[in-house]
Amino acid sequence: MRLPSAPLLLSPLSIISDETVDMDPPAFSASSSAFAPELPSAPDLPAPASDPEIAPFYDPVDDEHNEEWALMQRQGRKSDAVLSCPACFTILCIDCQRHEFYVNQYRAMFVRNCTIVETESLRYSDTRKRKRKAGRKSQLSVEECRVGRPGMVRVEPKDVGVDEDVLKPVKCAECGAQVAVLDSDELYHFFDIIPTFS
Image (cartoon, rainbow, N blue to C red; front, side, top):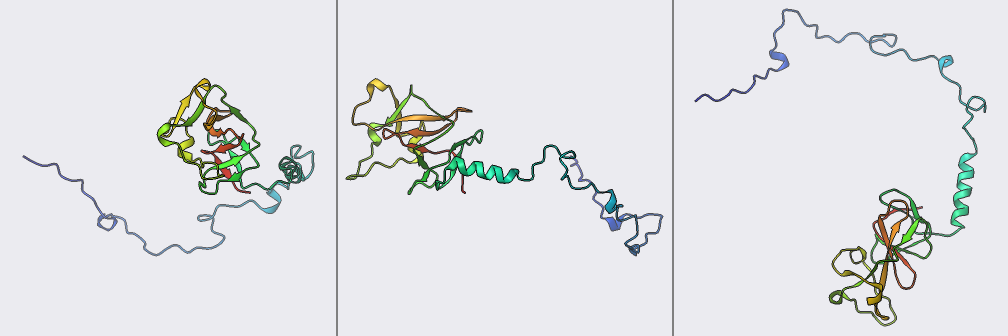
């Protein structure tokens, strides 16, 4: 039995040619057109568009107007981040606080472009209820807030007791991705978002 042979590999030095090869590099001069393409001279370049007739869509003070508008929207508030939807990049919140334990989670009172799913309710499962410390609200982790994760169960609104922590899923109004939950104190707990630090 004969094995197939490997292809023959030749190095550049092993190739023999009938022609002689000049090993000296060609002399280079700045005026040589063989190595450098001709660049347009200064008069051939277009003039900057400063005349409104030349550039009708250019506004030299547009950046200043945009910055003023953004500051008016924020109303001088300091925020830890601006939160955006991970699926469609729609801005969801411009005034939020970063969670002190879970760095990828934020909480906020005022949101935009969000829809509360009133027909669904979430609560901790009986096996994973958290114990509260005296005077302190239980801490929600990212894993516990996602629908379908261990520790969270869907419940019917009629099955919810008075003392239970009930959460409502919150979705992006543009694309429908779940981005947060709303607790009984009307605080939004954001997760799976894109924070932009300003």
